Structures are given as C-alpha cells and as structure tokens.
Length: 256
Image (cartoon, rainbow, N blue to C red):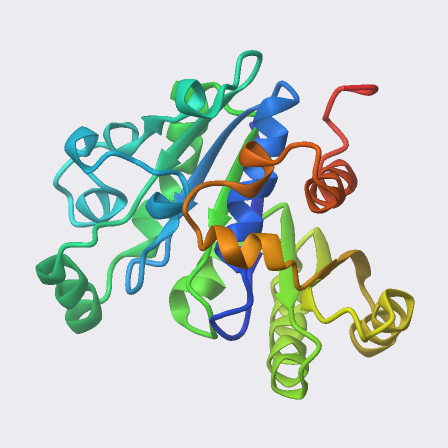
C-alpha cells in the first residue's frame, strides 16, 4: 500500500496546488512512483502546472466520479515530458468543462467511491506515494479525503485569516486521527523572519512546521506555466522544496 499525502489549505490562493505538484515532481525525480490527484473538482487547475496537452485527455477524475470510466483511465503519465527517468509521475486531472463543473456544483459527488478506488489506483500504477491536491476550505469531501490520509500538509500564509481557518483544519485532523499532520508556511514576504514564523506556527497549532517558503518572484513570473522545480532545479527555492520533500517522505532514497 502506498503512502497517501494530502495537501490542503483553508483558503484559496495559498499556493497549495503548486506545492503539491512540485513536491510530487521532486519525489518522482528522486526515484519514486507517484500520482497527483486534482480533487478540486469545483475549480481545477493542476493540469496547467503540468502542461497536459488537452488532446491527450480522454477521461478525467470528474468522469470517474460520475461513473464514466475506471480510475486508472483518468491517469496520464507525465514522466517523459518532465524528464523523469528513474521514477514515474502520473496526473489525474479534473475536468475544465463548464457542464462538468456545473454538475459538481449542483449535485456534488460521491467522494466515498473515489476513496474506495485509491487502493486500485495504487496497485495498478505501482505507486509509492499518492498526492491529493484538495479543494480548499471545510466541506464533506475534504473531511472524507483527510480521513484516509497518512500525512496531511496544511499550507498557510502568514495571515490572520489563514491562521484562523487552519486552526479549524487542525481540530478536524485531530478528530479524524490523521496519523501525521504538518504545517507548511508559503508566500512569506522577505521582511518576515522565517524562524519567527516557524515558532509562531508551532506554538499556534502544535504540529511540526516542515518549511517556511518565501514569496518567490521567480515563481510568480513563471505564472503556473510549468513546474518550477523542473524548470529551475538548481534554484534555491527548488532546493527548499527538495528539503521539504525529504522531511515528508522518509522513503526517498538517501544521498539522491
């Protein structure tokens, strides 16, 4: 059984999807077999980070949850396009079709069916890690996905509203008995001291802070047109992401 790692934030705009995608890319580059599920069916966007060619897409995760395909049919191997040689990276995107999004918003979807198929997906793709890029906020889908996670990463900005919402997610994770919960600060302006931010978050939430990522102008310039760690592997920011991946995924091979 592979490791299920969910990346969540209470509010949108924290950089959650970028964090998920870049962590997954690092893990695959270092030799693991990973998949990224874009479970934000209401406002999908992970496919843009991976530059997934829409002509390749026959089925999406949205099609699966509405019973139109098997879960592995919504998985696309992105390894070659990312230059990944030892590991593998699969993306399960959600549909950008307006009718599909409207159906999700109007009817919701059976997240239990999705959770039940995680083992099938892990088996058929021989995964080491399943990354779940969640829908932000507090809702039934988030609760059920969080409940089956081995590790939950809560992405938070140094902002009072983010702190308040993250406190709600911390309480939820305790009630659901998630085995491991970590906090990741993102988009921290350089005027703020990372050590101070880390200490404040650890005191507020009582969980390990796996990283304090700065607001990186080079990331903003890239504008989600690709994965930062793939484009700029020697950048200091990419090395920070790598260090966070190692903290989160002890199964990564040493010395890679």
